[in-house]
Image (cartoon, rainbow, N blue to C red; front, side, top):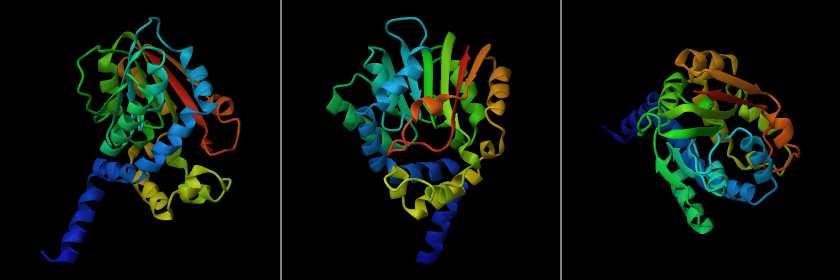
Length: 255
């Protein structure tokens, strides 16, 4: 196999393996992503996000919480500061490396592991709560993920999922509409195009959300659900480096 053929074979492999492509994409962004999350932790955003979360926490002083798609640990750090036992998982090893570096500097008790959100390596009914932000839109098999999340939640456990209809967005176009100081301005055009390419391959990008999520969660066995479409108005009050132009929704589901 010559060099050109080998390169083509490697590119084809990445293209065919969605999870590898997704992991490779976020690996390229992990360091800059970590820097922004550290700024967010040390900003007014921490309190705004805790205002969104605290009212939905199950009763108990030391909850076992799983932060799925933790990235560099933003939610995990906030919740461990409340003395909960928090585990953060992410598919991308470099994200977990960054989370561990930040956690060590903060003296955080949060535990971080590389793990696939669709194939959790935990026993049944392990966690009181699962929390996730901007993850489900990136999953090749979100229904499978939801099934596994239901499995590891205790009876009356809470799933709190913050997400948006990112599959409907054109990130290359939207970048032009952002203020000059917005973090997404620093993302290379090649990465924005790569993200568009990845999400175009994902089934969830073509679903009507969150209606699709509610239907699937109900089918899986979640007994109570609550939707909130006002998250963005409450959290993204300022158009600054933390601003997310895609409207967020929250799905709360109780097992």
